[in-house]
Image (cartoon, rainbow, N blue to C red; front, side):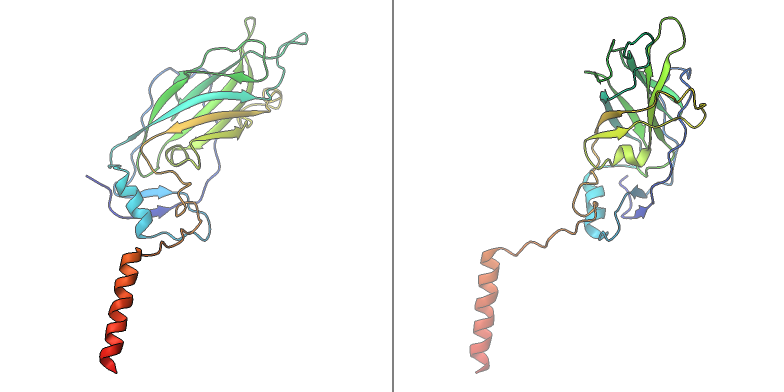
Length: 235
């Protein structure tokens, strides 16, 4: 069944802490939300109405989970966490609802890592509720537990309706870690999102009213002729 034509607006909330790096490897599932509604970001002043609802319906989204492909592309300007003047050996851990769903390969001796083919999918509820994606960046270390380099925390609505297909996020600290554990947090991470859902850069959803399109020229001429004929008959 398709969604009812209802748009629920929700203000962005604070991102929480990421799960521990030792979470078990499993494919996460989104928590259920109220079927028949959709939660999207709408900037202040945006006109939300029939067109926005039509975008949702035309996207073919049902009340079942939507698979969103997330691709980890790069991490830049990372800290030098290795001892004796080295750089870092970064890799990423991805969690969906506190369950590990992906681990990238390690890129050795760099503060600007680039990954290829590091894609995974997460099942997002169409109303944007009950899910969270956390991508952590770590420095691999053979002699001890790796150093934490930062994380990004995204709600499911941000995953389903990103402002752009490819986005760069500032790496954040983990609230449950001490200042020493967060000492190497800096830099950014770039992710790419792909799903069948409409993106928030659509002029209507993004808060930029779409300019009305003029009617076809033949219709304008027909109306003009009808008005002229009516004026002649009125004389």
